[in-house]
Image 1: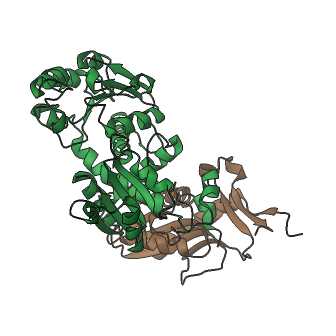
Image 2 (image 1 turned 90 degrees about the horizontal axis):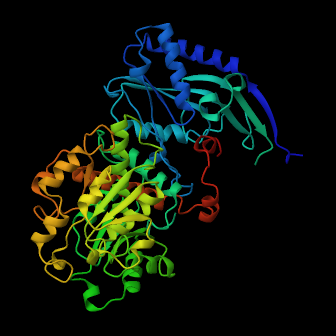
Length: 190
Length: 347
């Protein structure tokens, strides 16, 4: 019975949109403005999510410049499973030309699971400079943490079992139409 | 990939993966902390049976920037000069904890022998074997060419190849492993390769190579290459049966001030007459194959090549030493398109 994968949608494109808007407001609220705020997406899906958050921040406060303050942070070379996982090509890391020293960096990713990606991202970030504060925004928190890490801004808390697979489908990465975006959960996959 | 032995056997996808990875490795040298934890606790041995400073230092810098430990082993003054076989040397190094062996050897095929024979589990990187291949040199040349063209066009070099580029290689093709590795790699990446050399310095069978052959540099330059790669004239070949004298070589085959003027007027990668790139594997013999003015020309990319060498070697060491405890290298080779971000959502 568990052999048949069963896919269901837990967030639609408009749910995704609303969650991003809410997270953007939360970021501005907790940072008390947009001064010294930097968004870094973790490839691959964190990058378009960070870009969309940046657009919303600019709408909330025109003082925020997405071109200057949104970037990407690749973690491939900081992973702790390099010896057991297949070799992969790192994605680009782009940080604001002014650096990250003294800023508030918001790391953006699609799914928070074991927490190992975020650990690697914190390592990668410390090689780039010393931010004043680091926060974490994720679209889905699916639980099963293996490290003492939590998210500051969550699109949706999604209780899952380990044999389920959660995917955030984005038009920028998955080549689907904008209305087919959303969050899918696939059951019965070991 | 378990070993890097030649560029002839390197697929387009693998070569592109190395170059794209090298792009990210280059970015590391501009950061505050010029070091990555990627190979922490791993050991890289440089095993050089021939003299070399640049290649060895470059590999050493690459390994250290990835936090690996480096052991240097040179054949001179070692147990090899006492008659130790390659097999015994390598097994000794592995017993000392080596994970990768970077080898230069005077015999063509030495690295292949090491990788094919069941002597060691180490990853083997060929850093030059006789007159056969020197793959990392060709990869750094390809990175330099690719970046040069992307910079001229104002685009991101990642994901591009060398399709449509014309590259002229001038000099001692016969004894050059750099030329051989470049011919195969640049051809794989889609470039059009031209060779120019005296007939005495061309190997038998060169007509079967994927390259156009010229016997006159000026004719070859008239074909408007985007880049000109000058090979070093090895001192031991001078005055022998290959060409009469260094002076005559310079006049007929060198990048003299007069030829530099021609190169400066070529369309180049930007296609606007800003000149072709000049490459040289180093060390340059000023006044022999390259004039001092050409060596100091802004078109000359020799120093870029050196820094790209470190990036390419970091990429190679990272790709060879990642996933070595994985379930099955063969299985992963069959599905290289594993999606990194969906992978992450698995435990």
